[in-house]
Length: 330
Image (cartoon, rainbow, N blue to C red; front, side):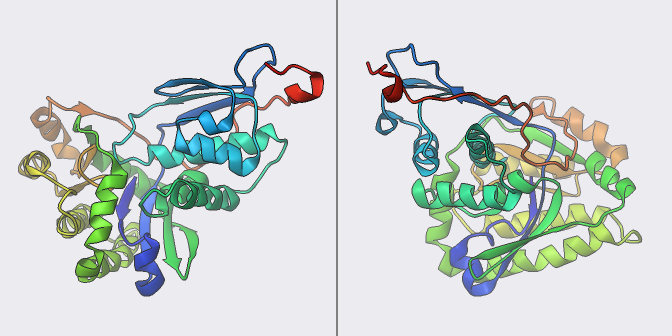
């Protein structure tokens, strides 16, 4: 869940101007189960996500991230199952969360435990280089590290700094945010591609979005500041972001956003690259019920901030012998 600085995490921008985001992970998860496939099947790998694949070679795999990750880490003869709490292509980093979780599982399958930075680096390389997908770096880093962080970008590198916020203020922030599913899915890579094509003309707007990161961090960490200023800052940020690409918003999204403001929200934003997905609103707790009533036609998604990032939930080492070594080749 990215709050501020989105769009400045793209290398073409931050390598020249610097970049920073404030984001947080929350309690909706991607579950990736990986084990070696028993050697008695006429296929070598079985994949279950929103499609079902059974293949005899890595080259036959349709899912680009799975295919390239298996090549990258020399993974063979597996059964992979993916389940997610949230729908794909909705602006909440589901593809990058899957990539991080899958890589974590692949390393565990090989008997290796790697650090969060290694997982984030590998996921960025997988999605941006090997799969050639447009976009920034923040989702992979957030999914790996977990928690509420400021992430700074410069010169091809990044730095993760936890937001030092009192638990009571963090709970107030959590209670003041409402998340709604618009029912509109989109391909974030296409939205990003359109936005990046106009990036040179939007440098000023991206710098304005970057400047809001320091202001937001100050509000969050200063116990004497008014938390409602975060809502107002979200509104400023969204209005700037909306002007950076033609596919970021549309009439339906604009109408929903204005409905939220009229119902008492101080601000909000469409999460992710834009074009659809989830709308986030900041509303004072005593006005939440009124806003919920005004959005009775949309699905509200309750959530709680979390701090762990990617974890291995269950690990049971397997003895793996390639089929060729035991003469089982179909």
